[in-house]
Image 1 (cartoon, rainbow, N blue to C red):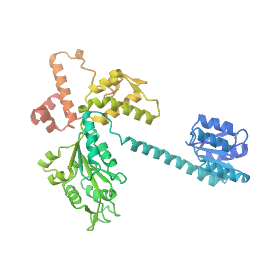
Image 2 (cartoon, rainbow, N blue to C red):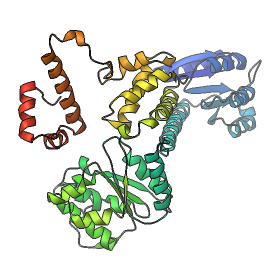
Image 3 (cartoon, one colour):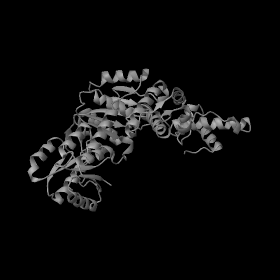
Image 4 (spheres, rainbow, N blue to C red):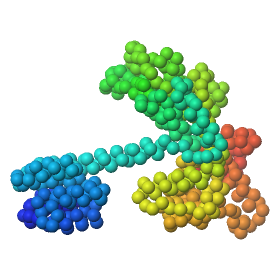
Length: 451
């Protein structure tokens, strides 16, 4: 419930305002002079302060000035008698949200309070968005693969060349795309993202190119597509390997001619868009299996950037962990936690099937569950998906014989390979050097099913 502080030396005014505001479901606190009011403002958090100008000990202007000096940005609504209007205007110039003459018009007061709270919400949202944008600009790591990616981006970004980014899920392909945009000559233009895997195939064309009113049953008004939204900027096509063949044909035409046609329309519209695409699939294999157009592949892959998995850049785990610790503790508003060397070594020893995304989740869990310093035991206790580690080692005491141990190791190995390949049995069988049929028989004998 929003909390409001009323600072006024007139008891009748405080009582009247309190009754009205409590009726509107606000929590109200009072202070009878500026000095007590400032003490309360320093100790507590309020959504709005209603502040009289003329008061004993400290007047409203002094309270407002000290709030500014102490960095307290709570919205202040100033109450002023008719003889103090000039003072009230001066208060607004010094940062007060608004002023209301005495005796206050209660309707105007309620509207002003709501507006002040709306402003707080907008300011908070803006701060959060700015934080997110700032975070998204960092590619963290000093390993050779990451240095190579940064060098490639520095060369490629200022050009108009199309870029195809490949890599496993969670490895940071979207971040690379953002860097390409931020360092390009289009940085002041929009960066529009489309997750091709998240949009049903029957809607992808409408999403990309827009549609005319009446183009299909639910098209009750004209829609602007992502290509138009990205005009003058960059269009990021994530998971491009999941796009339908019909949509691929239209994207190819748009890339060739820099023109699009809305679904249900016949008018061509020029677009000025740089396309950056990403996929976790082997597109050349998709081409062989007639699921992806070869001509589109060549159009998209002028520059190829491969993002390595976290297992291929484990030297970066310490610096990534420190980065996430600072970021997460900052988000939570808590002192930054330390992590000891043994804990970092334990993190480096893990198998990171979920890549950077998984590491961040583990660090967040460690921040929540650990004390001031994160230890190896914390990693053992909390780094696994269910709060248990994967690197505790094998407890040999629980096996009655060698066959049980062999079955356990075999099962763990197969599960690990299946998780890496998102339970694609064809790919897993290839990785293991056995036939798909043999793998399926092994799954049945071990009772292994997708979780």
